[in-house]
Length: 448
Image 1 (cartoon, rainbow, N blue to C red):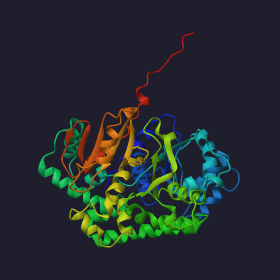
Image 2: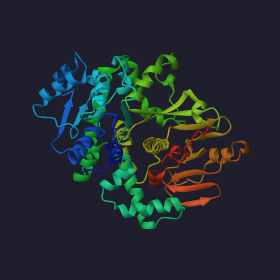
Image 3: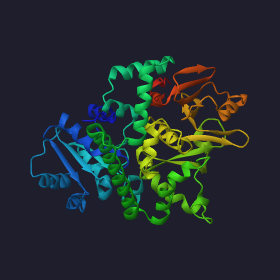
């Protein structure tokens, strides 16, 4: 069984005395169904009802008429053909994008409070038009991502004590043992070409057969292509963008250029097509910033962005057939370092960061700008051996008006601090996580 950090989200939800319905969003094939089944087995045993609206379309009739809790629960019991024990049963609605009335009815089911409810689906950001009434205040929405490098390391036998020791080195900015460092770099190279799709990771762990791995990756890509054909309104534009992701990342500045799709292409015409891929969880946009100042969200340029794949393994499968061989043989700098940048983007997104970069004339491009504890931190990704050459980062740090206190360079080298630049090994990205400051705000009691 593959360990997933999302399990902690499920456990936190389970401990709540008054539960909302938990809605798990995310791209296809990332393990949403599996993790809910494993969770249900631990906490609900046989008191578990799973309804998959994709494989059992007839179940949609449960929500076709009266949406009162009493009526729906009567139909659920008939569907299950067994007694559903109040306050001990979990009802799992899977692939809810196929039956959007569930998200309207969930309000009445949560108010009834007889059972616990989890919803799961893909393409949910694209299905809002089909929902007659949102159950605002009755759903707790959480996004799940492909497996991170941390999870991949555990799946491949890395001991928790080793990961704890690495984290200690990360926090203390102290070098890692040379042997451990070289082995972790090699494992990170394998993660880059395998990615975080659970079925793919499981196949690699069990067989170590890369041909099987690639076949599974291509099957997932085919499923994404099928979704475009089935669900996208402007299928041609969405498919053109999806197919162009590898070549656009391979360009020198990695920025997505609409002119490469068509000489007459305009951003406003393609905006909804880009959003389709983003809402489907297939692509990750990284926006250029107008300026280095907070809040970063209001400084982004919507028409200047890089578009990453949600999984580096899938990206490798979209590229040339020998790219996997080159990466595991210490050539991560291939394709202008675009694949290394993509794998880091997926880790930053999974660790809670929104993706931004900074590119300005006469200064150059800095790969990522992250917001942490009200500070802005430039992050550079260097996949080659000349990782101490970073002219754009140096120029940015010299601008006094930005007052940047620290910066990170993720590279092949060991941990080393030079002034306000810290060099971290690429695999250390697993420890760079968005910190939630809301929990540290003291409560305020009005005394008038």
